[in-house]
Amino acid sequence: MATARNRTIFGRRLAMAAAFLLALVLALTCRPAASWADELLMFEQPGCPFCRKFDAEIAPDYPQSRIGRVAPLRRVNIYDDRTGGIAGLTPAVFTPTFVLIGEDGHEIGRLEGYPGRKWFYPEIEAILDGDEAGSAGKPAPAGRSEVPPAR
Image 1: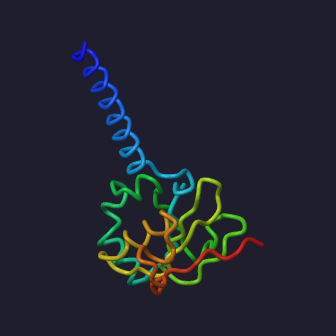
Image 2: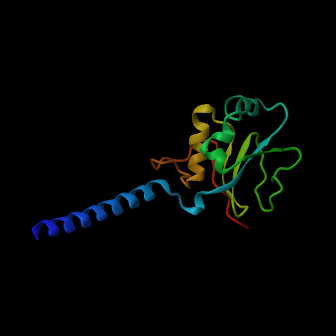
Image 3: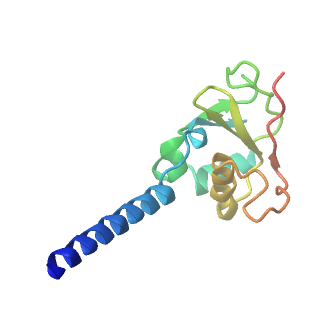
């Protein structure tokens, strides 16, 4: 009788441990729906040296990156269209300017300028993850601007 009772207790503990591990895995791997984006606009212009540097360092591998799978890159010539055809978007002024657009068509955030290979992905992913001020509570680095209030 003690053996059957021990098996029942062990089975319950095992089920609780499995449920805890499943909850932990889900909590660590799932993202809230608000963190998903539809596209990353890149405002550029002919002759822009920082655009060329982005093209050499990031563009070839961007589609296979985490952010590239979530938000495909759409290039926009700043002379043709400063809003990427998105009503209400604050016009881009500098090149390159990267604007992360949410599934609802609104701006999530933007990065003005190209910070180089080392900082591009951390900056864009911080915007995607909703961490505008950086993960350690530091002020936002130069070049990253907040989304202007809706009009």
